[in-house]
Amino acid sequence: MKIDILTIFPNMFDNIFNESIIKRAVENDIVSINIVNFRDYSDDPHKKVDDTPYGGGAGMVLAPGPIFNCVEELKTKDSKVILLTPDGIPYKQKNAYDLSKEKHLIIICGHYEGFDERIRSLADIEISIGDYVLTGGEIPAMVLVDSIVRLLPGVINEQSHLEDSFNHNYLLDYPTYTKPRVFRGMEVPEVLTSGDHAKINKWRQEESIKKTKKRRPDLFK
Ligand code: ADE
Image (cartoon, rainbow, N blue to C red):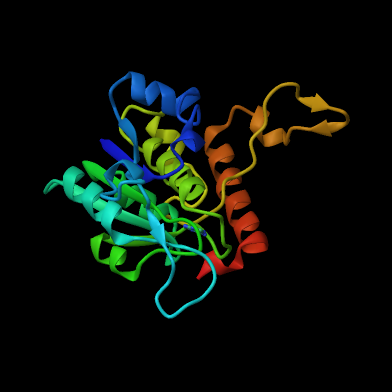
């Protein structure tokens, strides 16, 4: 998979993909991640990317020109263009699975007080990572890339994402433990040390259901 992230704050991405699982996925050529500064695509002599809003109002608005130039240069028939904005569709694990099947993602990070409405026409999908407003789309882009790349074949053991919270059965994860068996008086549930795998699976399933009903009744539709 190829991912292009369009931003005017490329330094925000320094190191974020240079650790752990994402780093390994890049080194193993499972994904290539390119941070593209769309300021470089501005036709303005001062490389301006924003301007005042028509009709008045506070703040500056991202202009369409640089982002259109940039997307038009990068886009191929295999590209899916994503615009990050608080008024996009709420991002869910299902979206991460769907996007992990794509060949090329172009992710546009909005910024400042907003962006010119015509930029929306470039997007195949508009995504919000939650009902709160961030200073820009950079952190949401990191969230998307992390959640998508871990699902690419060969990045992590497939069994571990089949067991994720929010996988296709919409149950939260069951509790897990490691050694020691007793830590500060807190014991590992006996069933997990029983060696009886049928019993362990049944316990895990029940714990998942219990936790989901208690914490996220909304997922229990
Ligand atoms: N940009 C600012 N806030 C955002 C959010 N919650 N999701 C996606 N993009 C954003």
